[in-house]
Image (cartoon, rainbow, N blue to C red; front, side):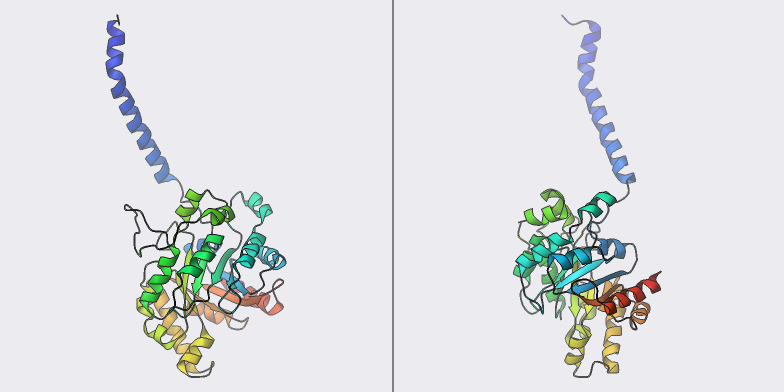
Length: 322
């Protein structure tokens, strides 16, 4: 038969456990609220989120040697050009593996990439990007550049191709994601569990914790006319200018003042909407483009390492930043 003391304890235990659980929940909430935000795995996004400039190159060369060279070149990003180069996803996967620098991972104590891998896809805005986006993302790329985006609807479809369908209680449900679930290979490349990969694999800055970038190429008169509406699409991280195609669309030479006027219109829209703006610039043009408001600066095309002219362009840009 229980004593009076043990009888009192037995009746009080549920209340004690409840109070303990409430206290633990409160402490967990306080801890989470006071911890610094989780770091970005993409150095390109980390730079832009901090208000810094980002520098990179494009490449057709998907060899392991080129990947290793670029991975150690102090770049923020490299984009593989599959618009004008082959849509070779097997070679792309090899290239991504070549970018994996285990020594850097050990040194920095983080699985964050040393260089953000992007892909410029072949399908234009007027075509469906979904199948190509899925292939590239499921391999592990951390951002996509969509060519010839001319309307807000095209930009929205591009963003949707990169996002997983959101849960009912998601904080950022729109644009509705249409990406199919197949994260195993990408999670392995990112160095995450599949659950953590899915959590990170959302478009920034729509989702501030996301590590995927959706960049729209603006390269036609129609795109310039619609630039405000395109910039306002949730999930669009920024624009990348295509001056040569833009001049062709305008029907003028590349050095015509109308081309620069159109470029300025695009940059102004980026600034108003708080999104990134990218362009490829030479050593001479780099300071002017930075002063103009560009935040993603490409030095040109690399293959087998950085050509002298590309290295000079990047150095000129970093000198302005520093």
